[in-house]
Image 1 (cartoon, rainbow, N blue to C red):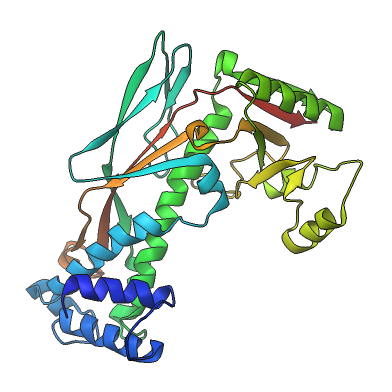
Image 2 (tube, rainbow, N blue to C red):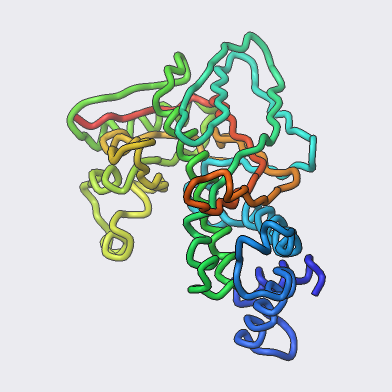
Amino acid sequence: METNAVVKLILDYKHNTVKGDFSKSDSREVIRQALIEANGGSEKLNLRALRDGGSNGLFAILEQMIDASAAEGLQGDEFVNNMVDSQTVTEGDSVDFVVEANSTLVVSDISRGSLGIRRQSLPEKTSVNLKAIPHAVKIYDELARIMAGKVDITALSDAIDKAVVQYLRNEIYGAFADVAAADTGALYYPTAGTYDEDALLELIEFVSAANDGAKCMLVCTLAGARQLVTATVSEAAKQSVYDNGYALSWNGVPITIVPQRFAAGGASFIFDDDKIYVMAQGAENKPIKQVLGGESYVFAGNPTDKNDLTQEITAIINSGVAIVVGNKFGVYEIS
């Protein structure tokens, strides 16, 4: 089966949108046989096949799977939908993001384990160029059982999805952590103190007015959202708390949850549960910019490079993240 057809069938299978004369279980078998064929006729990934290039066809399928996973893996994520402006580029191309005059630009090329950030003030309207750069994702842990023949080879696509989407989430959430930590000068309106409904309402109105009357949203962790009590609680709000753990809106202002993440190399959270961010809504106000594109690449390492002959397989994906804070926002810190 042609590589593009295999990738399309795998995606249709995952989304329960398989069309044609055969059932989902039939399509799973078709996928399995196609992957086995691409793997040189073997149900297992083994060192000899990798050494002799017998799995090159399989890797070609995986490379297209990575591109598809990167493009659609974050769809349906509320935080991503509200906070990330994502665009796809072709190999070697880039995207220009225009920043208005008197803004502050916060740009960070986020990589796993590094949250370094650089800032510059912009005296006039400026175009900021963002290019997708290569990042490596190790998928050895996911492949170990497959290589041992303990898991059906069709599980390989799920392992790729998990690794790629997890990496892209880390980029995005790391970017928001930088927004939260950055000193953005006149763009940032802090309010702190014991929780007070009127004080938060005033901050929302202030941010709205500072952004030409734009509607606002609250961005916080789940623990932060549970602190947002109000004097008037509707039955719908009670049901929302019962179903989701928090009210979907506060006094008519929608709430967007940022999932907590561990700091690199530790078990401490990177987001402050006591900080409630007030940000303008709208596609033009999304502070996190992301580009995806270029050709992905999957390759196997040389097991003889390691004393224990372990086999590592690496996936190279191309992505870039920039943080463009061009709109005034507020932070209400509950003490």
